[in-house]
Image (cartoon, rainbow, N blue to C red; front, side, top):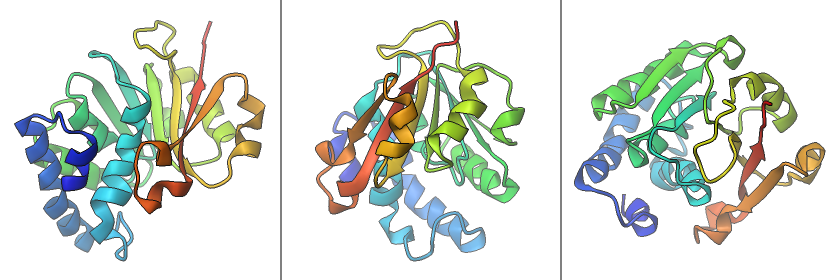
Length: 209
């Protein structure tokens, strides 16, 4: 938990309590339904929670923004972002029922009022959002084809509405078709831990005129 406060020192007491609760909840659920690699559960705060919050180093969502988390698994990046931005609404979707159950139960356990969880694929989701977020779900081009319909035209944030993905490794070829509308941010510029040396946030603006 200290690592979250190190990079996000302005959390209120409720947010601190919610972030602290995640440790026990994820360990308990993970022993029943494997949503995080068992070898990696001890790295929950660095590899999953802080990694998810990398998106918050790129954009501070305006209150009232709506965000769709595609392929959320056990709730990443949606749950950490929902704690950080309590005045925004988050819809978390995943096509694997047992994973979305974990996300839903954890969101409920920590009292998140701004999270809805839905067992479905993104192609089934018809609502519009300011942003779509995801963590290493599928290649950028494939994801953009599926989520373009979900991006709202009306703008209310400092960055144009679009897609924000957490990705790792070499991304130049994957991002090349979208180079005019995308920006790659290196998370090592924001977080000093070695884990983030190859981690990136890819933002692609999506304008539905």
